[in-house]
Image 1 (cartoon, rainbow, N blue to C red):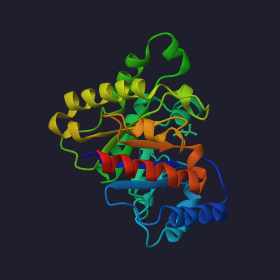
Image 2: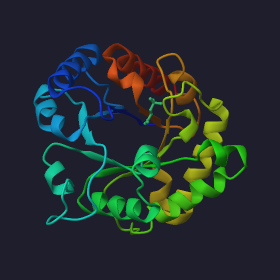
Image 3: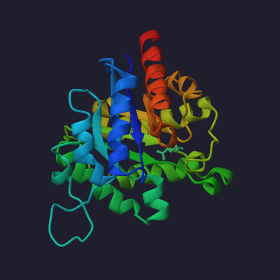
Image 4: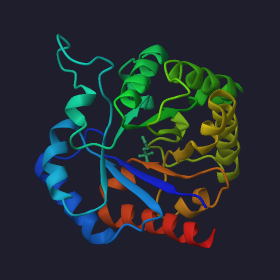
Length: 256
Ligand code: PGA
C-alpha cells in the first residue's frame, strides 16, 4: 500500500504570528492525521520554532525549505541542519526557486542533500524541467542530470529517507499542470532511476508531484500508480484547501 506524503511549502509568506495561526487552523481542519499518511508543513526559518509549539500534540511534522551544506562557522545568513533538527523531520532541497531564482547549482544541491540525510533527517529533493526544456524535448535529460548530481553524495548505506519531488517548473504557481498520466510517466522514470542507483532501497523511495496542485485536482494525481503524494505551495496557505488535499490522499490510500 502506498504511504502518501503531503508537504505544504509556505515559501516566503506570512508573518510569524500568521504562520502560527495557520498552523493552528491546519491542526483543526485536519484533525487526527491518518496513520497511513505523512503530513508536513515547511514554513520560513523564523517561523519554525513558534510553529512547532503551535503544532504541539499534533502528528503534523515540520520541515525546512533549505539548509546549508556546511556544519557551522563563517557562513553569513545560512542555517545548518543541526539548528533545524530539534524541530524538523525533513528538509527540502533543490526547489526550482532555489535553482533558478537564487542560483543554486546542481552540485550545491547534491551537497545539501547528502548533508541532510547524513544528519538523519528526511530529504525531499525537488527536480523538474523548465518550460523551454519541456518545449524542446529535454525534460528527461534535465531530470536525469538533476538526479545524478543531486544524489552524487548519497551512499547506498544511508539510512535516512530520501523522497523525490517531481515539479515541472512551468507548473509551479501558474495554475497549469501536466496531464496526471504524464506526471505519472515522469514519476515512473524517476522511480526507475532510483532503483538503478540505490538497488532495493531505491524501490522504496517515494516520488511526489508538485506544481499547482489544488483540492480540485489532487485526487487525479494521487490516483496515479507512481505518485505517492504532493508538494503544495499556494494551496497549502489555506487550511481548508490543504486539509482537503490531505483528505484526498487519505481516501485514495484507503481505496488502494
Ligand atoms: P504551487 O507551488 O503549488 O504554488 O504551484 C508548488 C511548489 O513550489 O512546491
